[in-house]
Image (tube, rainbow, N blue to C red; front, side, top):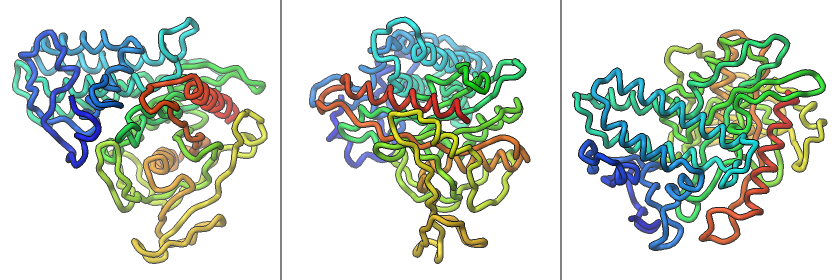
Length: 415
């Protein structure tokens, strides 16, 4: 089992054994030399040398380990491409529903219900099994990639996004994110935006102005995942159901919430969860409307959200943005209005995937002419980590995550 130090210098792929495959009942249907992604490699990471692997430990704490073992055994029995497609779709959706049910359980659970990490690590265990699976039929690399994407999207809530047919109820589509920046002891990080999404999916909330029903998904922290159209797939499906609002959500700055005014059509190059960077204009998503706005402005009722007094964290309207004076070398950063004709450099939420989630979702909204649908981005406070560097959790960590997720719920219900 690799320790953290052993991961330094790894490239995007390495020959490694998946913990999911290692416990399969029929290991003969897996090629354990098949390469895994950097994300999947982290399934072996520990907090201390010789200690238990963090990801599988969190999966077990949530009671998802039996689901992983069952998946790896059943995958070996798939004998035809169509059968395999149906299997991964069903299992991905079941994993998502199990995570939502656990998060929203009204009964005590064995591990903190607000923990978003077990879903993340269980998904990686199952995707690594799919990557190393040797089926009984011929499967081209492109077909395997499609199968993994089908499972991945289903396990993120993209197959479970139908709003109930209920008149007089406001419909809001929201997305959170996976944990990220997971090197070293940070492998235990959580993401309160992902925790909030699990709390919100399918939930109906009563407000003074009527009932609100929500559909949620969790986005990958991967440039490649965005290039494949995961944002457009979720929000495009939502648009077909005539929602009232979009809210993309991610983790932002210490101690406060920010409603971001601007999303920018620019990637700043920061590495994703596969240690891959991307720099330049946000690419188009094939098959979807693609207006070429350099900046897109929020239409969320920011003042109403600020005045709602949701607490315990303050809520700020962030007007900042940057534009290129000379593309790639000189920026102008301000809080007024973008200059017509200049190339966007960063929105209020920066130039990483949080900014891009707002940009893509609202580019789609504008492209479809859905100007009656509100749209924008909410940055949550930064979630810290357990005080003991060798601990997976502690009461203060769990309380902070719960406070953030509950305030997200209150803020979204105001939209």
